[in-house]
Image 1 (cartoon, rainbow, N blue to C red):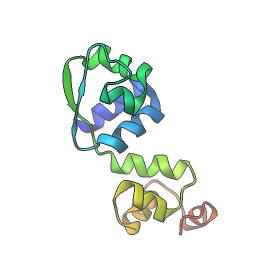
Image 2: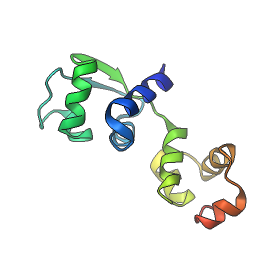
Image 3: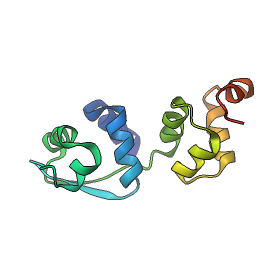
Length: 117
């Protein structure tokens, strides 16, 4: 379910807003009002425009935001963050970050090029 919800969130509000949401609330529920205002929690996290879009799809529901650890590792990697930075942001061990990066086809040389090892 969470992979499907992650894909749906990306489709609805884009990568940046989804990354902000899973970083702030991953693994926990968040209430999505039908008509959010700038003061609602969801709008403070993703912005009012994205919150409005979410309100149209999930209005008056609480959704359990996926943790999306592997996806977050790849997003931070695409931003050229170092392994220790990614580990700190995702709450996982540096070895886990390296394993995820390798699993997605980055060689040691590529990792070195981007400050990863």
